[in-house]
Image (cartoon, rainbow, N blue to C red):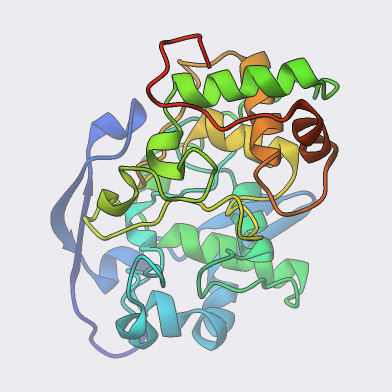
Length: 292
């Protein structure tokens, strides 16, 4: 990290152990970051070392995420949310895509998957061209930017129950869940990201953020499998308006919601075919509870 670099700021409150990390400001210097250069990561049978990722980070990542990992790389100036989201600020230790409960740190596997998968509708590409060892080392490098890993352990990954068989009744039940937890307010009644709250959404740093459009062919940010979509409901996307619904919907209801959301997507699916056969109508925001 060489030359003198600007100071940045970070304080993660103890409330992070219970809910979303509360962000306030304190000095975080290159010296602070350097004290964690011994950070490691563990993915499968591979061990990553932060010290071995300095060159790959400078080659592939620093342009967006910056020398201090604060998301202020030279390319970030040209990214204008919500169309072009700003790069992740690794110093905060707050990540959208996790297998762990809301407010907790992700696992090393979660970070590895994010590097490998990339993020659709952003400037973060898939880095599956890098070797597995390079990616595991980069996970350790990402971790060394934030003091959260020095005092906290990753959360315990949530349990995803076996996926049930898709049925017409489950799709209709999913529409009821979509209405009850008011997904339509952001995502719109047809999943087109045009709900009444969509234009007002901001992230935890007060930057505009777009709701996911289920209809435009984009890949969901944290993965495209039914299990990935289920996981998003139950963990939330930390740092965004998308909360965890773990306390609001039951596992069976979450599966119903997955099936209903599949009816919006442009890809062919049995859920879309069933919805067509049912002549399923969008939710009516004005309908009394339970009368969709």
